[in-house]
Image (cartoon, rainbow, N blue to C red; front, side, top):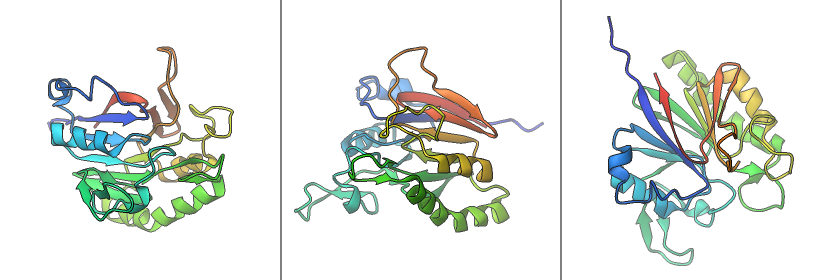
Amino acid sequence: MALEITLKILCISDKIDPRIYSPNIKDRFADVDFILSSGDLPLDYLDFIVSSLNKPLFFVFGNHHTEKMKHYKNNYYPVHEQEDVYLGCGAVHLGTRIKNEGKYIIAGLGGSMRYNDGKNQFTDFQMFIEITKLIPNLLWNRIFHGRYLDILLTHAPPKGIHDKNDKCHRGFKSFLWFMKKFKPKFLVHGHIHLYDLSDVRLTKWENTTVVNAYNHCIIDMN
C-alpha cells in the first residue's frame, strides 16, 4: 500500500506576526513545505521568511504595500523607485500567473475590490478579465496533469464567503465562478482581518475549501 504524503503549507496575510518574525521561526515552522502569502505584507518580511526557512514562498500583492509592485521582476525589486539599485526577495510573485511547486499547481490573483481608484483594485468585471488570462494554462494543466490547479491564491475573498458589506472588503463574484468551473482544492485569501477566535477561517464551498490566511495559519493538503 502506498504511503499517503501530507503537504504542510504556511499561509500568511495582512499582519506581521511576531511568532514568525522571530529568531525562533525555524523551531516553529521548519516542517512546512512552502509558504503562501495573500498580500498586504512588506517584501522585506517575505524575504526574512524565505531566508530563515529556505522554503519556496509564493505571494500576491494586496491593496497595501504596493509601492514596488510595478517594479517587481524576477524576484527583485528596487530599493527606491528612482534608484537603479535592486534587492532580491526570493519570493515568487503569482499575480495572474500559474506555477508548479513539485506536483502541485498554484495560481494567483492579487488585488481587492475597487473602492477609491488606488493601486491593485478591480471591479468584478476587471477581475474576471484577469481570470481569463489564466484559462489557456489552466486548460493545458487539465489535459496534461488531469486537473486545472490545486490552489488559487488571492488577496480578496469570494463574494459571500468571509467578506464584509463595505465596498473595500466585498468579495469577488468572479471567484465563485472560478471555483465552480476549475475546482481548486483550496482558495487561500487575506484582506479580511480576524479579531475573534470565533471568527470563521475555513469554509467549504462546493469542491473548494476557502481559507482566510490573516496573520498566519497552517493547512495540510494530500
